[in-house]
Amino acid sequence: EADFIVGHEDKTKEILSAYPYDYVIGSVHFIGDWGFDNPHDLSRWNEQNIDQIYRQYYNLLRLSARSKLFDIMGHVDLVKKFGHRSALDMTTEIRLTAQVFKEAGVAVEINTAGLRKPVNEMYPSLDALRIYCQEGVPLTFGSDAHAPKEVGEDFDKAAQLALAAGYTEYVTFKQRRIERKIKL
Image (tube, rainbow, N blue to C red; front, side, top):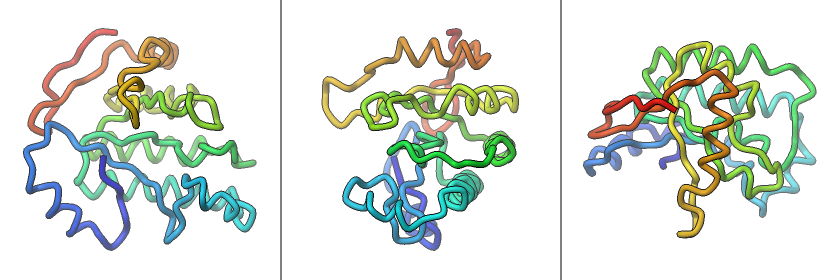
């Protein structure tokens, strides 16, 4: 997993190209200098316009996909981690993001780590995942494990979420290309 940070694309490309990865997950953890998913920066949420943060977040996801640095986009609604929700309907933002993902040739990840976070739901939500499916964005799974026991945790629930969203298959990668499509 590699962070997308505006202005550091060349350095990220240099680092990533030095290793023979099968895939690289791109993620957005920063809006400007703010690590919005960092518990130590939680108080900064009180200073933010949440609707504006959501728009900025989805814009950064689109920029990261267009950068061509990544194969999979990870936890694509991480902005909800602490339970902050936009009061606005984000359907248009999500649909634009899904269209960019499709054009950029990246897959979207169902990430089960959200079940272990304050939001207590996977990334992305069912409604968002339906949009990614409708737009034809390939799917993969991740547990975002930070401990050995978390590897593959809740993949059964992730598969059920994928089916509920309309997906019938997921993809695997080898040498930074989709290697196989596997039926759910």
